[in-house]
Image (tube, rainbow, N blue to C red):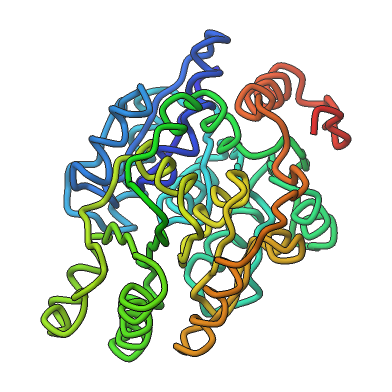
Length: 361
C-alpha cells in the first residue's frame, strides 16, 4: 500500500492538510506530488510551511498538462504507487486521475459531486471527468451526494465524510481567532479565469469595489498573481485601487483570520465561499453561478454576477445580515481521518461496502 497525493495549487495544499496528518498518524506510506501549477513561493512554498508538510517530489519542467501526466506516470511506476488521491477540480486533479486511470491505479476524489451546471467552465469539465474516473468519491454535503447518486457515469463508491476545511479551522483556531486588520472591512478575492481574462468584467468589478471602499466600507484585497498580471496587461492599475487596500497574497492562516473577522466577504473562489460559511461570515459571490449551492439556499451567500448594481446590492445585503445561525452542512472535525480510514479499509478489503450514513456528520 502506497498512496500518492497529487496536487498543484494553493487550495489543494490547504485542503489536503488533514489528510496528510491522518496518513502520518495511521502510518500509511504516502507521497505528495506537486505538479507545479502554482509555483511561486507565496502560492506553494509558504503554504506548505503553514500546513506543516512538504511535497515529496515537484514537477520541475515548465508546466504542461501532458508533460505533468507523463511525469506522474513515471513517478507512480518508480515509487510503486497503489492508490492516487486527488482533490477538487484543478488541472492537477485531472492530471492525477488520467495518469492513474491509464495505469489501472485506483483513484479517490475528495470534493466529489460539485456542479455549477456550467459546462463551459474548465473546472466543471475537470470535476465531471475526475468523478467519472474515481473508484472512491468523497462528497462534502448531502447535496453533492444526491448529485452523484443521480449521475449515470459514476462507477465508484460514494462516501459522505465532511469537509477537510473544518479540520483546518478546528486545528488552528488559536491562530485564526487573532485579528490581523483593525476595524470593519470587506474582504475581497477575485482570480478565476472567467474574471481575469475579461477586461470588461474586471473594470466593472473594480469600479464598484472602489465605490464601496470610498463610500460604504473599507475593502481589503489580497491580489492573486493571475489577477495582478491581468491588471498590468490591460493597463488598469493607474485607474483603480485608489481607495482599495491592495495587498500581496496572504498566507493561509492569515487569510482565514481575515475572513473570520471581516464584516462580509466578496469572492469568486469556491473554497472561500466554504470558509466564509463555516466561519459564519456572509458572502457575495461575483460569478454567474456557484457549485456551493447549500451556502446560497441556507441564506449565507448570494451570487451577484458581474454587474456593479447587483454587486452593490448584494454587499449591502451582506453587511446588514444579522442572523447567522447556519446549519453545519460541512460536518464535524475529523474529515481527514474518516477519508483515510475509508481509503485504507477499502484497500485492505476491496469488497467492503461504503458507509453512506456517516453518523458523525
